[in-house]
Length: 199
Image 1 (tube, rainbow, N blue to C red):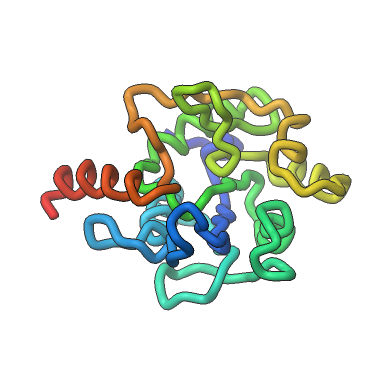
Image 2: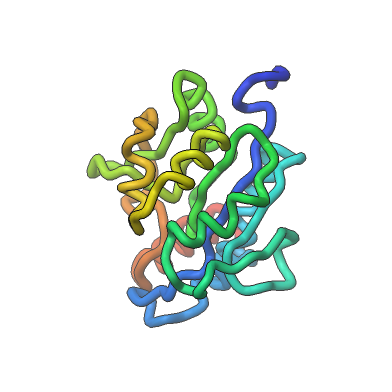
């Protein structure tokens, strides 16, 4: 149950959807479909399933779906830090979910786990089976993130977010690859999720 003042009470999301997808051959990765929905739709729908009041900002080209605020980094394709700079001004909630557009396994339970972990600090981030932080699957205090971004002159999310000492949230019992970076990962996700959905 959510309570006013809890980290889980209200968040907005910034979804980065403007990458070149070089490992996927340059395809429109956010527009790829699994179980009848695009990867980007799945991420936006998951955020709203967790918090129906959540605002969703997509940093990337305009699309008819999902319903969201669309902005672009300058120049387009400049990388995740410029993309975050473009998206963060739209966030009004006290907490900001920073997400990739290629997370077919993302569920409201993941956001709940991040929210619970983040209550003890300024943020939380999922950590994969190899121990790597998934910087585009995290939850942050908006004002802390805003202040860090204002003071940061580099180009890497690692450099921006590591000093915030996010609480690690291990991924357990999930897929080997949580995101979709390769054609093989896409096929695995389709096999997993389309079978599960009955598609």
